[in-house]
Image (cartoon, rainbow, N blue to C red):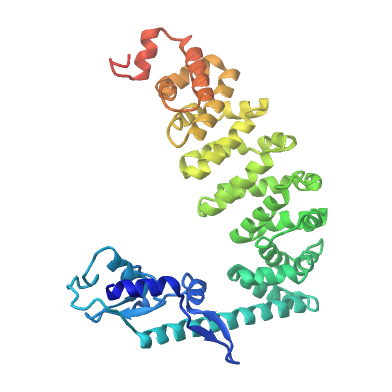
Length: 429
């Protein structure tokens, strides 16, 4: 049996036995586990990387050419019938592999040190978090703001800190800091912490108290852009379960105004998405839709459509479709300048969902003013777009709706004029 085959058999029946030892000399983790724990979070020196797998070596061996590889990778290379060095492509005059014990020791030592440093840092972070939670029970004013700010930074950057806060009654403590007399400085930091944690049903009910909701909405309207986004995300978390107390949130006109401000903030695309997601959740509650229309949401969203990315555009059209189910929503849509050409452009442009939402919006306007809508829509190229939908692989319901809309629009035109408006080729005609 060739030497490389003997080595391959040995590799398949054994594992890397080198381990890291703690201060008392006890084995803690083997090299394989250390690499799995650390590889994704640190930059590994290139000399520790196997040229074949481009991953850290667990059992480095050296060929007669002087090149070093991880044992399992080079033996697999040999098993495929190669008799060359993968890096230099030199023919090998000796197929044996020599363990590179020096490099193996360096790799194990390096990963061990990194692991111990990471472990100590985590322990320090957890200790700091516990200390800050204890401090928050005692201090007020600027000292409380400073403690919350430090804790928020830890929660933002360290997943372990979130778990520490959740497991040590930190959620209830931070929630208790929110109330009618809470300063915006304290509230902003507390909300920045809560939005990153896993809130249980009981805590969500607690945050639904009128005084807390009022503070949340005030901060959302007056804070920094990041604070506004945190408030919006926290409100999303409170509404997502359909809590019976959600009417306290939904009845706030200031909340709806604040959400629209987020949606209009073109300088911060992330805030636009955050605002649209919350507005979509709010619109799913039928009792609030009339209020949303009354504060001018429809023309504001229509004006934003050309500037939105695909993700935001789909959400905005979904919201407009929902609002178009109301008489006042349809009227608001009809009164928007250039509404029909703007929406026609979106058919078959972004996604099937966007096409469906856009078609529903046009249909709602058509029912309000059939002749006016049909004329403007066909002039804007609607007929051609509808034919594309009918001939596409869209779902049957959307195709049927397009066919019905095309038929309704054609009532105001002769066949020849309608075809000319479609701007189709002679073959398709």
